[in-house]
Length: 468
Image 1 (cartoon, rainbow, N blue to C red):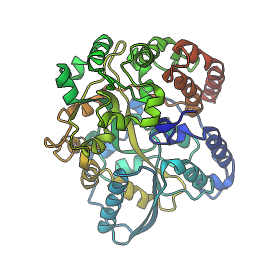
Image 2 (image 1 turned 135 degrees about the horizontal axis):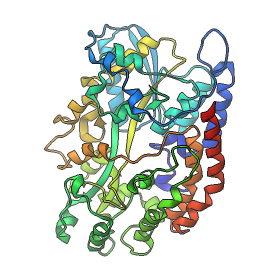
Image 3 (image 1 turned 90 degrees about the vertical axis):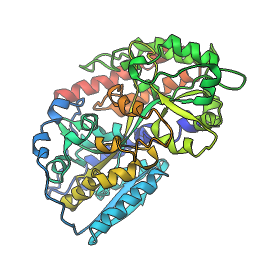
Image 4 (image 1 turned 30 degrees about the vertical axis):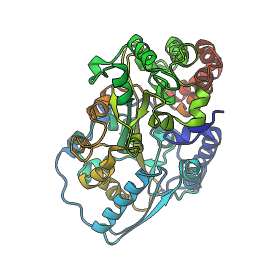
């Protein structure tokens, strides 16, 4: 197992740690009356297969949401809200809750914060007991995992009855949380990835960064410039661990075939190997152990890395370093296309909530202007609402980065892990192989092929579930 920043539970809390335990507990929970949403029957929900997101189907509620909803009436409720993100997102969420309570003085909201290292155990235990929080954070990749076990409420009621108009938000936030034709979670904000770079180091090396995705560097240009930037103890480039989510899309491909019969990852071994070579052959990127021991944020903020494939949530950390001049640029075309990945700041309503209407009212508040502006402060969360994305609250011209539009435009350059019936288990078979590649311990092709036998077994399960 890896250590350092790659081992901590962060954006993929349900995927990094204890996956086997999580799957086992939830499967057991879903086969017992205690975990089933209260229906009066005591029957357990049947685990249904999850298909890839279907944008066309997901768009159906739009017509219902198009008409403006009447002003929300104050609600009287007793709700529980659980989340895992730490500062500064923690304070932002708490601020939104206080603003909701000010508008709804008869509403009681118990705020429960559990850091990612403990969050997985807590949320699984709460769902297993049949008493989950009414609204809780959920890793975007875990949405189908929970939805297919009938543990979440679809958000259609919010779209149709609480003034949330799909057209006011980027379509990917609906597409990527759609399971079997239903939107199963709300994306309050986004954390897109691109290249952040040290302005002073670029100027010193005489390098001009591209400002649009159309002008993204090729792999050869990235390597050439990384060599120029690598001087002394300064590395020219560092890739984010989760870049591998996007590698198939960079090659105009997918992780698996559409019928789930083919494991495609070894087909992209050349791109994996190219990245590995940056550290262990060309010496323009820090080796794996250095990144895990020192931490990539520290390497970048201390001027030891010139370009880092990072996510927007680091904005405040960067700007808290007065001497750091930085900006953002499109990722390079490492193969056929320039593709990045955006994490979704995603929350779901529990099907077992005792007050679905109040929970929907509370959840929809996070999608409104007041809450979206609160989340956008400091620029370390991209608000889901398009009008707030383009406002000075998020796109502040007096705050770094100056080329902030690269973050917004990255939403149209997505390459992501697919939503599959057993996607968590599939990812956990590939991840140790990626660890070996990033650490320079095995050639990429060999490492990716090593996962094939177990991957094919799991894909066979997915195929079978799709037939049911």
